[in-house]
Length: 313
Image (tube, rainbow, N blue to C red; front, top):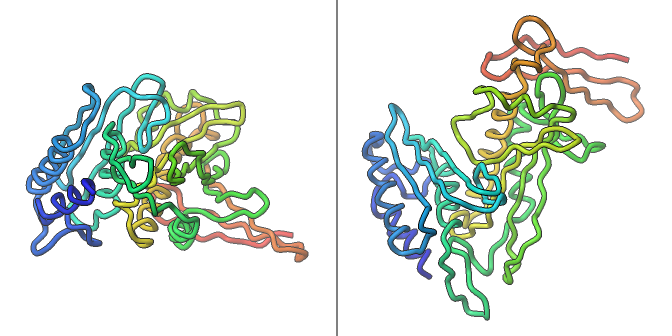
């Protein structure tokens, strides 16, 4: 398959692109070396696969990482992108080491925008990066988000049917859903949505609502603001459960960080005069015990907070 050959060529083009946990063999690369390797890989993809005429990408070396940007015109359901009815963009910062999740997201986003279709053994064609015999399984997402539970970033709430995390004035609800697919080989994308109930769209009118990575889209509904990230079933990229789990964990952390940039200490959403929202609490009640454990979560970018967990009747 052409994509497999491309992935093999990509990995051999630069030691930075060998898909190991640190994606580096030997001495760590400089940002300039990693940028040259990524530029070579994306150029290879662009030469071998067909893309829309207005599709563009750029690779820039930073002080300690590499920034890759993808832009084009699209419908508003472009995966791994900030998108509306006319355009989309994806921005990823690739660290010099331990960058398997970021590289996987970059490859999946880049390959998924190709208009090339690859003949498969059946009567259908494959989207580049996808396999006819591979699809996401929920265990991969559960294990990935389980890392965030262990880190104290999110907590599962059975009654809500969602993971909850501190979003300043209120709790955000993180859910995942499998999207309906038109693919004849039944692989389907997964969408993560973090909904902040009753939060107005004016919360986005601030630079604090911009994360350094851009892989999702804010949407507004009567229920509140929702930040959504759609992940294509790129089985060539996430060929192992571990790779998929690491990717889901990265996406989960990105969502929590991105949502908190909007809700913690911004403009009209301040609920005291300090410029910061008071630390919220996640309340978990035991069945029949009559007791609730109220535990504050860490406020993003402010370091560990004093542990003031208490029990309340």
